[in-house]
Image (cartoon, rainbow, N blue to C red; front, side, top):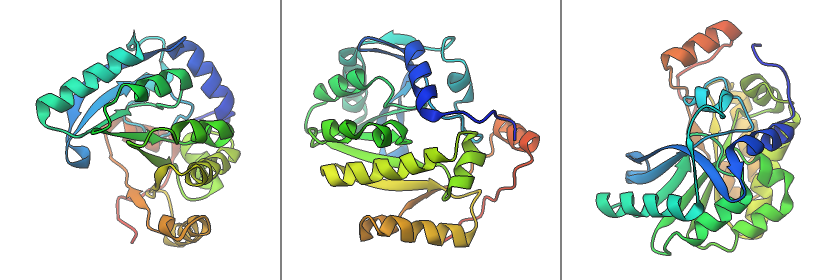
Length: 244
């Protein structure tokens, strides 16, 4: 391990104090991206996890150094303008964790036109911790939430993120909260550190919430140079092979 075990909820609070000021939030980039068939993307700063495979590591560990503060209206305007210029019908916040700064996110959603789909990519920690969060998100009908699980067990979650294993339970709780609130939601999972048996058991666990969740989107490791160096330092075993 190269991380000190931490409480992800406390880390969320600490990061929020750095990257949020009232309803303002720090972002470091706005761009079109090829994912989802083309999507306008705002890359935010600040996260409550430190995933060993993170491609935006510097923004996670040094949130005070990167980015500028933007209002919800300014972010929405930039996203919509990119979508209009590129002919996209989808927008998202990516890079770090979008749910830091609840007031900012909810106000931003208010400024996204109904004919544009907002994809919320989240680790779910705060939505699992705060049961009101899912209910607040349920008010936006052009919202799709993708909960990205960091592994398929409590142990994998802790090894990947350096966080307390209980954080995995918050990810599961987030999925339950969103489903019960009527939010359109789907699970995804990083499986490059998982055995086929663990993946199978994880799917069964999700299917207990609703059978639709048994069909998860799998995420696999992207071996960027700095990611590979962190993995080597941590002596973590992984695979880039796909588990069905």
